[in-house]
Image 1 (cartoon, rainbow, N blue to C red):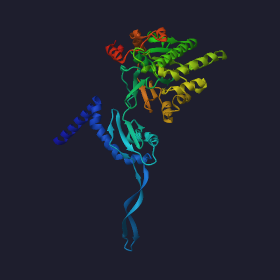
Image 2 (cartoon, rainbow, N blue to C red):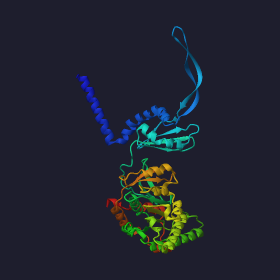
Image 3 (cartoon, one colour):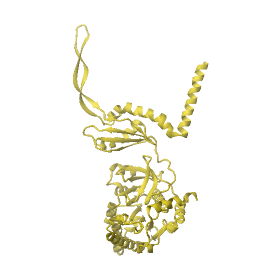
Image 4 (cartoon, rainbow, N blue to C red):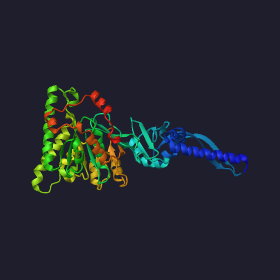
Length: 456
C-alpha cells in the first residue's frame, strides 16, 4: 500500500473511533450534531414510500404530462404522442421538518381529507418498523394536525433514583416512555387505581409515594388488609393504620365524619374547597393508601354482607366527595374485577387516575384500562414479567403512556418514614381539626432546609 492509502485508512479508523467514543460518552450531543441530521434527512426522503406502505396516502386527480404510444408503422417505429391529461396519483400527507427530542424526534403532519388521528395511531407500529425506531406515538394538538413522536431507544431500560418533590401533593415517581417525568399530582388527579400482579412493581410504586410524600405537610392513612405487613414499617409517618376489616370500617367512618366537618367549615367560609380557605384555617390534606382492595369486598359468608356494604358505601362517599375537602385515594390491588360487586365498579368510575402493571387475567386490565383505549389494554397485557415497575398510565393530559417507576427499596421508604416522623399529625388532631396546613412559603422553606434521607 502507498503512504497515501495508509494515511487515509488511519484517518478513517481514528474518525470511527472518535465517533464511537463520542456516542458512548456523550450521546446527547452526538445525537444533536451527527445522528439527528442524518435521521431527519432519511425520514423526509423516505416519507412518500413509508406513507404509501402504511396506507396513509390518498388518490387525487392531477394533470400530468404523459407519453402515450401510438400505432406501429410499417417501418417498425413506434409513434409516441405526448399530452396533458388527468390521472390518479398517490398524495402523501404534508410533513414539516422533524425536531429533535431527548430520546428521538417528533414531526408534525397535515392530515388529508377524511383522515383522523386514529388512522395514524393504527399505523404507528408499521411506522416504527419502517424507520427502525423503538416506538412511535401519535397525538393531535388541534384538528387537521398530527404529531408523530418517535423514540430511537427505550428510555425505560434504565431509570434514575427518586428525585425530591418540592411541590405539595405532587411526586415524581418515574419516567414515561417519552422520556418525560411520570408525576402523580393529587391536586390535578385526586384518586388513583393501581392494579398489578405479584412482583409487577405495584408495591414499589407505593414505596415511592411514601418516600415522596413523607417530607410534605400531609397526613398519610393506611388500609392494609394483608395483616399490616405492607404498611406497618411506615407507621411512624402514618396518622392511622387499619389492618382488619373491622378497623377499616371504623376508620372509614372517621373519614366520612372528618369530611362532613370540613364541608361545614367550607360552607361557613363561603369556599368551594379547602384550597380557597385562608392558610391558618386550611385543614391538612390526607392521602389514603389502600392495599389489597379486593379484600374489602370479598365475602366469606352472609354474615359479612352488611359489613362489606357499609365499607363499600363509605369508601365510595370518600371517592365522590373527598377531593374538594382534601382527601385523596390511592387504591392498589392484584385482582380488580366486576365479580367483586357493584361497589368496585362505582369506585373505579371515580378514580380518573389509572395505573396497570403486569396482571394475570385480562379482566383486571379491562377493569383498569378498558374504558380508555383498546390499544392501552393490548399494551398492558404485553408487559413482560422481567420488567418490574413497567406500567400503562392514564396521564392527566388525556393520553396513555408506558411508564416505569423508580426503584425504591422498602428500607429507603422506611427510613424516610422514620426521618420525617415529626411531620405526622395525630389522628385525634385531624378529627378535631387542630392540625393546620402550612403556607406555601413555609412549605418551600421547609423543603429547602431538610436533608435528603437517601444520602443519610
